[in-house]
Length: 122
Image (cartoon, rainbow, N blue to C red; front, side):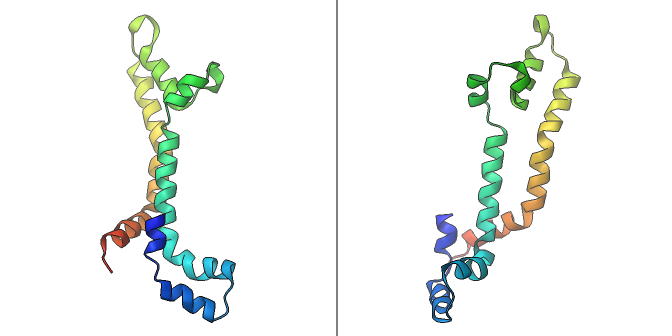
């Protein structure tokens, strides 16, 4: 997010102050359209890392009804007496992917804008 805010020209902020915009109005009306790709990219990364979080859930959850999806998939993979039900395992993996794919598709235009904005020098 620091790089996103660094790409906003200081002259734009100064002109908003000269025009009489307060701090909140400057953030909402002037800076928000320019920093929206950075916010979307940060939100996407934050969601993906928290959605697939495994170690904390494995360490702190002990009741089976509170298990997260990655922990439940691990239990399916281990199975009874070493047998693996691949049908359930693949179905659970697809279900785990659905929210990530939907969020990525929804934020893709902002994500691509954010990548392109960071690559241009100026």
